[in-house]
Amino acid sequence: MARESAKYESVIVLSTTLGEDGIKAMVEKVSNLISQNGTLDSVDEWGKRRLAYPINDETEGYYVLFDFTSAPAFPAELDRVYKITEGILRTLIVAKED
Image 1 (cartoon, rainbow, N blue to C red):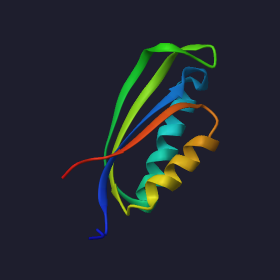
Image 2: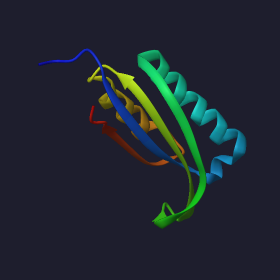
Image 3: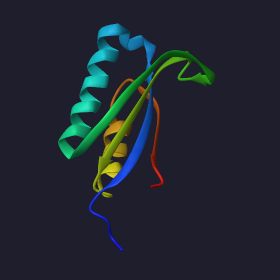
Image 4: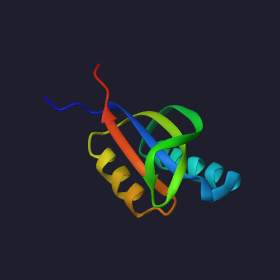
């Protein structure tokens, strides 16, 4: 039974070396990308946190949670964009249960 859309959440960890403006621009970029391909339900900026282990010699990251609704094909494209975007250290996209 295929559904038109599903709910997802995505957490990204941004490099703090982007600076405040760079982080703001990145959050805006991801928000716009999600909005163009679905419905952005909420953006929750958790802010700067210490990483459990260093990633690319960085010990802090800026965490952002996106809740969105989109077609089931979109998360794969979002993940592809994350992988080629400079400044994103880690990502996670999960489907939410109804």
